[in-house]
Length: 171
Image 1 (cartoon, rainbow, N blue to C red):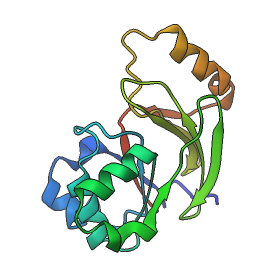
Image 2: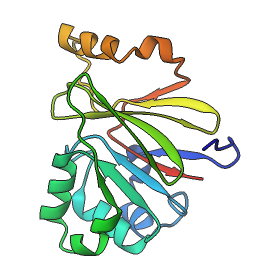
Image 3: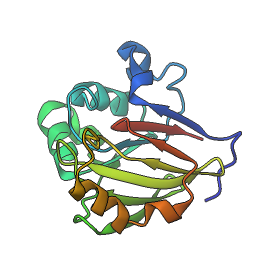
């Protein structure tokens, strides 16, 4: 689906400093269609807060790894109420999984980081966006460089690269 720049909003976890505004879906978190969760570091993925948001915002979907889904299931009491909107995606390192959620075509890749980590490549608002999750770039070791090269990221003509761990999209 081609989503115009006027229709797209990209917010990152750092934008969610006011947990009350986030969980209740107040601006700028109103109308969030998709949450991409790359990993489960507590500073990037607070399961109780994400679960509460999904519970109150019934049109929003979430995509994440097995560790993300497990953490949400274990630490959010209302998981059964949101389970049908939680999408598990777990590519092997060097492999990608392509899926479409809420009209967004997403390519998901496993990227080495300080914890099990996913990267997401997608188009939004006419831009090619790469959300790398938590790469742990200090230092960028040979394993990370080899993995990124295996995904041909330099050839992808990426317009925006983000390293946030969790991203929210509204369109």
